[in-house]
Amino acid sequence: MEKVLRKLADELNSLDEASLISLWDKYYERVQIFTPSRQWEEDILILSMIQAVRWKNQLFNQCMSQHPQEKSQDKKSLLRPVRRNKIKKTAKVLSFRPRE
Image (tube, rainbow, N blue to C red; front, top):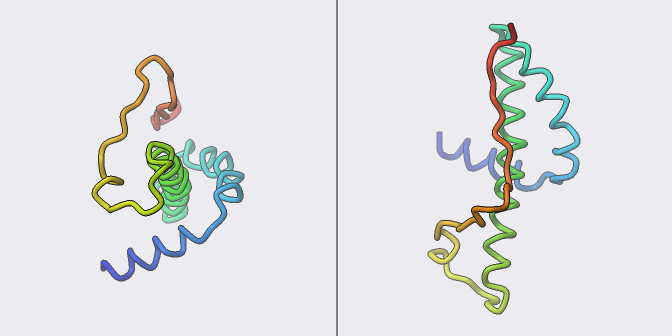
């Protein structure tokens, strides 16, 4: 199982974020209309993977900007929690509820 997940992560990491983000609206619209089907399940997984790549890149960039003078970082420094500016809104929470 872990080998399959590593392979998926490697594939995702090799994809261009801009190309993935261009598909975000398409899959967001698809998952808004729930159907108990394999297609809907795959669509929500695709949307989740797009979000995961975007989040990973944002976190990576934020961690790198906190340590610009260090060329080689140890893994522990990258695993520290990221502190956010409480005044600035940086994210939007999406609600996934059935339409009425």
